[in-house]
Image 1 (cartoon, each protein chain N blue to C red):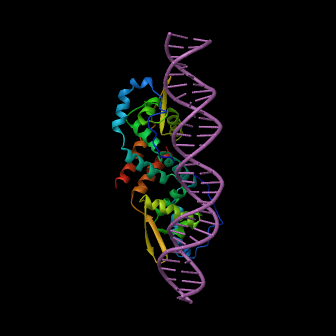
Image 2: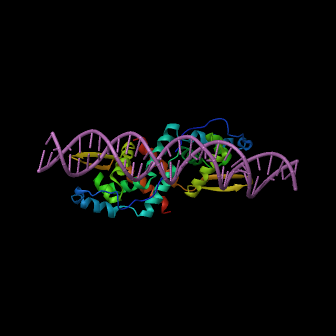
Image 3: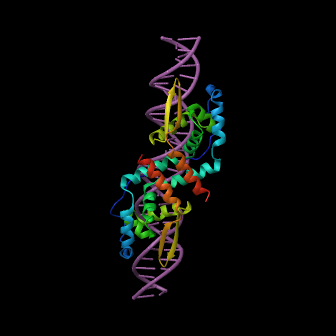
Length: 124
Length: 124
DNA sequence: CAAACATTTGAACATCTGTTCAACTGTTTG
DNA sequence: CAAACAGTTGAACAGATGTTCAAATGTTTG
């Protein structure tokens, strides 16, 4: 997804904005910083893919190696590995190596609470 | 993003899986259904864009019209409208019409709690 | 009714994303 | 050490995504 910001031009003047000036000013001050916004979007982007949700759900039951996850999800080892890298970068999973095998597990409880929160919304 | 599931072929045999059979069985039973997983991913996909996060943040302070949001975010009215449609489809925002002006506001408290949960993670 | 305005919509476009495939890095074991 | 195995990595590809632009829809007002 594009993450550029386009300022200035192509944003037409808006007469009515004078009327809503207070509302706009409130919204300006109350928001998140540009960096927080970007980090938030990056985080949720990670949750926005079924393969990654399935990996995280699987890891909720306990640690698993790449091979196990691949078999469980019926996704190639390579695809799983690529997704685990993204989850690792987002600090949502951690791993330990035991011989040839690499075991992945959830990094902390945030994963569970975030997914639980989403589950609550979709079962409105 | 692709949401296809590839079953069967191209998932190589995995000798060690026999050893982890219990772990794999646990992960299988404990997960979400296929439909829940898809809905979860769809929901988080919506949060995974800075423009939409900024729109939601702005609406946390109260209702705003499309024109206000456009000015506030320095994003074209058209782009805002497109994003509002996505937020509407995800039932994250609602709207009311007053003459020519359409006012948008958050649909329920889930938006706040979901974003707050994410904010907690990124400020680990 | 025509002009002005707020918003929506659809097509086009460049960019991003996830999977596959092949090649590679480590690690164990015969 | 060579073979086998677990996992990683990078390039390539098809498909998805967000913005822009132009045209359309409603709504108010002169």
